[in-house]
Amino acid sequence: MIRRIKACLNGGRARGEHPAVPVTPAELAVAAAQAVAAGAEAVHVHPRGADGAESLDPADIGAAVAAVRASCPGTPVGVSTGLWITGGDVARRHATVARWADLGAARRPSFASVNVGEDGFAELVTLLRGAGVGVEAGVWSPRDAERLDGVPVDRILIEILGTPAADAVAAADAVLDRLEATGPRLLHGEQDACWPLIAHAGRLGLPTRIGLEDTLVTDDGRPATGNADLVRRALRVWTAQRERR
Image (tube, rainbow, N blue to C red; front, side, top):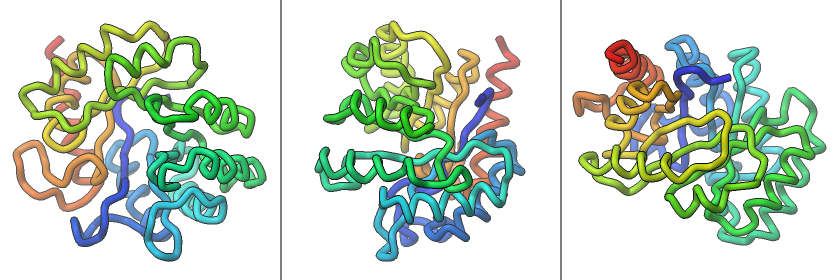
C-alpha cells in the first residue's frame, strides 16, 4: 500500500531532456533503488525496447520489472499501458498485454496504470486482473471519473495534466468531487501542476507521486539532479502540509 509517495522514474522522456532519465533495465534498477532509499514506497516505469522507444512487449516489460525488483526487493513495481505505446491500436495493445500472463512472478508487474479515457479501458482491466496484475485507473477529468464507476480497480490515479499551477488544485478538486468509486486514491500532476498537487495531496492526506516523468525541476524551480532528489523534496513538501492539518 502506498501511504505517501510513488516514484515515476522515466515516462516517455528521452535522455536528452535530462541526463538522469533511466532507460535500460540496469539504469531503471539503479534509479529505483535510489528512489526507494529516499523514501519512495513504489515505483512506476515505462520499459523500453532495443530502439529506446516505450514498449509493452513482454520481453521488455519482464526485463525492466525483474531488474527493478532485484534492486529493491519487496517494493511494488508498476508499468504503463498507455495506448500511445501501440500507436493507438487497441487490438494490438490487448494482444500484447495478454502475453504478460506468461511472465514468471519475478518478471510480472505488481500493477499497471490504465487510462480511463482510452478505448478498451474496461476490457484491459479485466485482462490484467486475470493475469494477476493489479490495476490503477488513470483519471484525468471529471468525465473520466464518471466512466470509472462500476469498473473494479485497485487504486484510482488522479492525474492533472496540461494545467497551469494556479489552476491545478481546482482541477484536482473537480475530479475528486465527481468520483463515486471508493478505495485507495493517489493524486499528482505533471509539469506546472506537479508541485502544487504534491502539497495539496499532503493537505488531503492522499498519497502522491514524483519523478522525472512528471517534472524536471524541484519545488524551488531548480533543475533536479535525479529521481531520488525529487522524492526527498516531495516528501518534505507533502509532510509539511500534512502536519499543518
